[in-house]
Image (tube, rainbow, N blue to C red):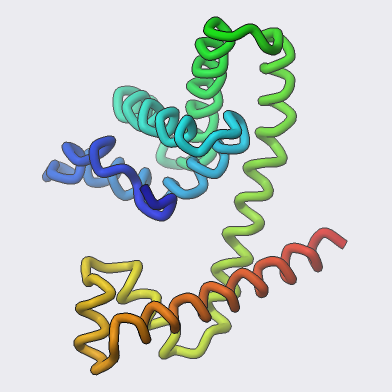
Length: 190
């Protein structure tokens, strides 16, 4: 499963919804999915476990969506719910194999949570700036391949290019973005 897209089964029912509340939730969750997954991954330290925790978190967020204040950050609210879900997951895992005390896990989660959210936000902002610096043709290729419903093969066909050529361009763009984000975050850490 790609970290770029939410697991289909965790919100597929919401995607089919047609009322404003459901559409609002689906949009907010989709927009913060990558940040949420990265945050949970920092807490549980295993990608497959992080996906499971995020799926559970999505269900809790949906059930508690009436409690969400639209004037506040959805990402912050989602991360606070995810933190408790991750702690519950770690607690259950600890029962299966004794590791760290619950107090230590709580302190660790609290220590990581502030740094993790800030780091994810910093890297997300840097990525947005780096994407803005790309030539328009590269930004358009990214939008078409990752922002819509077109497959890479469809995009290649429409551009008169081979699929391999489009994947090669995407790999080069991804490398440029990685370097730009690393440089940007290194400069802001100074």
